[in-house]
Structures are given as C-alpha cells and as structure tokens.
Image (cartoon, rainbow, N blue to C red; front, side):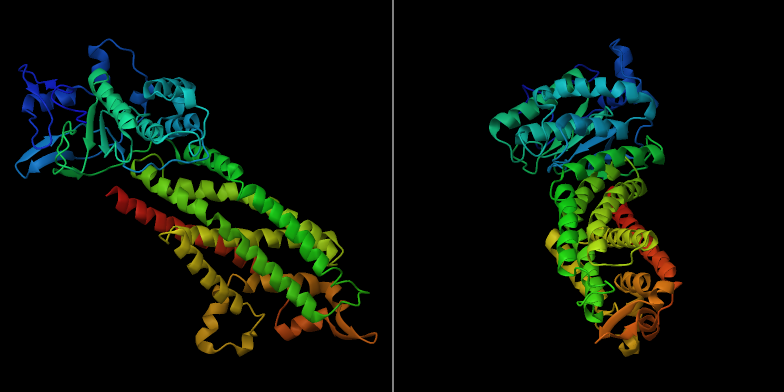
Amino acid sequence: MDYFSDENYAEEDDSGENNVGNGNSVRMQKTQTRRTHSNSRSEWGRKNNTARNPCWDDCPIQSLGSCSCQRSANERNTLPKSLGYVTQDEALFPLLTVEETLTYSSRLRLNAGCNENIDSIVRELLKDLGLEHIAGVRVGSGISGGEKRRLSIGVDLVHDPAVLLLDEPTSGLDSASALHVMSLLKSMALHQRKTIVPHKDDSDDNIVVACVSNQAVEYKKNILYCNSPFREVLILSQRFSSNVFRTKQLFAARTTQALLAGIVLGTIFIDAFGDDSKRKKAQNQIGFFAFSLTFLMSSTTEALPIFLQERRILMRETSRGAYRVSSYVIANTLVFLPFLFLVSLLYAGPVYWLVGLRRDVDGFLYFVLLVWMIVLASNAFVACFSALVPDFITGMSLIAGIMGSFFLFSGYFVSKDAIPKYWNFMQYLSLFKYPFECFMINEFGGEHGRSKCMESFEGECLIYGDRFLMQQGLKEPQKWNNLVMMLSFVLGYRFVGFLILWYKSYRSTN
C-alpha cells in the first residue's frame, strides 16, 4: 500500500506549486526550505494562535550542529535543528507501563520546571497516539506490535521535535497496524506542521516524504542536557528501581535464594565452629568460607540480562541527549546498594549463628559488612563486563572463566608461596583473595583467636586460630585493609564500566 502517494501527501511551496515526495526524487525549492525553517515549534504556535507548552521553550533544544539531506555534494537542504529519531527496532522496558514509559521519557527530556505539566503532556500524547486504552498495561505484555511502534514514536515526541526521522516505521507490522502508524505520521505532518521523514530500504516503495532512501544524511551533534546531573540520577534511580522490583527473577528469586542458601548451608555446616563440637575440623571451617565465597560471587551473575537490556536502551537515550552516561552509572550503583544489603542480611543472618561463628555482635556486623562488599564487588564486575560483551552467552562464558581464575588464586587451592612468580600478579587482582582472608581473620584473629581451637584430637587442641593465621601470613589489621581493597574493586569496576559505556555512546552519537 502506498501510504504517502501523491494523493495522500503533498505540500505547497511559496509559489503555490505542490512538491510531492516520492521514491526517486525530491523537489525542495529554496523557498520551501526557508519555510521549513520558519515553521519551528514556536513560530507555528504564533501563526496559528495556538497555546504551546512553555516546557518546550524553557528546555534547551538538542543542538545538532549541521544536519543536511543531500543527493550530491552540490545539493544540500538544511533541516531544522530539533530532531527526533525512531529506530526500526523498539528499545522499551517491558516491565514499565505505556504511561510510565512516556512519563519517564518526558521527565528526562524536559526541564525540572515542567514537572506539573508532565501529566498533561503525557495524557495528550497518549490521546494523539491512540494509546489511552492501554495506558496502564505493561509494555512486555498485552500490547500489539503496532502499539509498540506508536509508543516508540511517542518516546521521541515528548520534547516536540520539528523533524521526526523514522527508520522503516512499518517494518514487521501487519497491514492494519502499518496503516495506523502511517496515518498517525500523516496527521502529524499535516496538522502539527512537523517534517516527517520515514525511511524504507526499498526504492520501489513510495513512502518517503522529505528525503529519499538513497540520500546521505550528514548528522553532527552537540548535545545540551535538559536536566542537572542530580535530577538525572534521581529519575533514573526511580525507573531502575521499578524494573528491579518488578523483575521476579532478580528481586523475589534473589532474596528467596539468599535466605534459603543461608539456612541450608547453615544446617550442612551446623556448629562447625562450636567450641564443644565433635564436627570441628579445620577442613570444614575453611571449606565453609570457600563455598560461601563461591556462592556469593556466582549468584550475582543473574543480573547480567538486565544490564544487557539496559545497555541497549542506554545507547539509544544517551545518543539523543536524554541524560549523561555518568548519571546512569551512578543511579545503577545507588539502586543496587540497598537491594544487595538486604540480600547480604538475609544470607548472613541464619548462616552465621547456625555454623557457630564468633558469638559477639562485632563479629556478626563485620561478617554482614563483608558479605555486602562481596556481592557489591561481584555486581560491579558483572556490570563492567555487561558493557563489554555483545550478548548473554558470551558474557556468561567470559564471567565464569574469569571468576574461576580468581578463585584459583584465592589462596584456598594454592598457597601464596607456591604460586609461580610469573602468576603472582593474579592473586592481587583476585576478587576471592581479599574476602577469603577477611573471613579467616574475623573468626580466628584478635584475642578470640588465641583461645579458638580450630581442630582437636582426643581432647587436645592441635592448632589455635592465631597460630593458623601466622602460618598463612595474615595479621589482624589486614581485615580492614582488605575491606578497603574490596571497596576499590567496586569503584574501579564501576569506573571501567562507565568508560566503556561512554566510549560506545560517543561512537553511537557521532
């Protein structure tokens, strides 16, 4: 179906002649180009005596430097400086509702002074897009492909761009949905005086309005952000929290897993550290620390799919100047802080007392803090590699391999003295080494360790805690030094992840 045929779409230039966009040629006279410039959002509002939303004037428009549509080096038609770009594939959060998707996009693309107007903007946009009846429906369930495509268009209409570029807007849609989408675009072009530029990679289809598909687009950005970094972090934190709490595989499953693992592991190693326990053996105690560390490190990899999904949307939104990459990284980190602390508490609470670790509050609080730092470091590690890998399978393979090498150099399998010199650097990079030492120092160090018997035979103690730490080359102050090292891992992996995302966003933008 020819949605933008000569009948359906035509524009008059200043001389009164019709200029119709077709698949092979475009006639854009200089007078028409000048008129396109003058028909910006504010100019159109003045000419038609229509009240326009002041939010669109107060918010700095995305400055695009130069954006031209050209057929040759000698023929260039400059387009307006405010663009919206809708890609062929939708990048939407499946757990957000249709209304929430437009609301968060509005809050990010409009300035802080427009908070009271955002609801009215979203309601008007829902009405224009024909999505009012599904405003409360989640994107991932209950809406059709055509509705998703209209929602994707709406996400780039919240800041009211003068020019809307669309990459194959009807691709993958049935004829009815395609007609609905193209009718919407035609309505915007005629009634809202927007320049609509759909692109279809087929020269036989006559749907291009202002530029033909084989023309080169010169596109340079100089992004002006609409919100302060603090406000961006606040909005992104709220959106990410909604996604985390609604992801059953991450929130409900992760918290349940931590609680059950603490109980089950506690019953397996029950009273392994007790003073009068017959099960008290150094092998059992060190084995408990090693397995706890392995479980805590490996369990955070389930956040990888969420990071990958976020990255895809992040690249799209940052390329449009919706927010800074640094704001996303900070918001992501802040959201995981309380969530992973809850996970740490659910695991440490039952397991600490069941296995018979130090019966004092200081020891328990340090244990909880240590578990929290472990899951934070692991989460930062996964976030860093999720910015690097192309897909989930590659990410899981790479993360599992590196985690395995970290565990090998933790000091549990091979002592520090036995590691060859050319592999010596790996123990300092290992995420396992520092918390593993902290576990042992917390339990066997200090005054408590001098009377803490790790293993006995026929009523006689074979080795005390402080003596064991001396054999391992560990000292009491190291438990705080190691904790600082783990914090540096958290910050370091987050920073490296930021650099990778920033570079990818920079390439995407340019």
